[in-house]
Image (tube, rainbow, N blue to C red):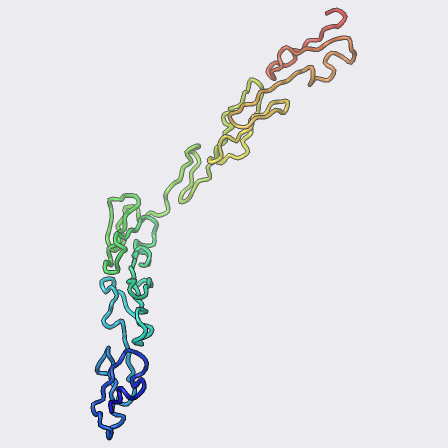
Length: 271
């Protein structure tokens, strides 16, 4: 009587263990042995053994990147669910081994000191196996560098003393910050002064160009390079230029705003 054959599912319904009946005599019941396939040292007599399959033993992850492995379910029927974890928290499950990126300029606190006088660069962020290779470079003199620590910059004892100067008006400056720059496009006046045009720049910001407005005395305007053409017909703008009667005719031979008081009144009876 081979109990591995006669007993239904003697070692359970899985495929993770093997059954052996050392004594098939009918006088020797309940002596069959279940042995785990993954670890043959784990056995049980007269019933299924408790088998486990720790996929993290041995570690399948990339140990060169200092990855650790965790198998959340060590049941033999649960495969490919192990997790590889990088020191910076990046993870991947199963055969998708994690790629660890460790930028020491980010992970190290103040890698180049607390000042603003140098810049940090980590030339090899692809692997956690390359620690302490970040480089600090002085902003004032990029030839001065140091690996794995702050560089000794010549202006490190005088931080926050940089000066910003406006290009449009170099008399406007500010130390340790952006200067308040303006650009008045009306200085000098780009409009037609021969027509007595005035100029107004509604937005003197350096980034706002071509928005100045040229205005004529009679209210005609034009924006930017389209300089206004002023027309001043004094026969129209002057009240009763030739009197209140109907006996004469008015003519302004030059309607340019630069030519005032040149209108001509002509008697209709004797032209």
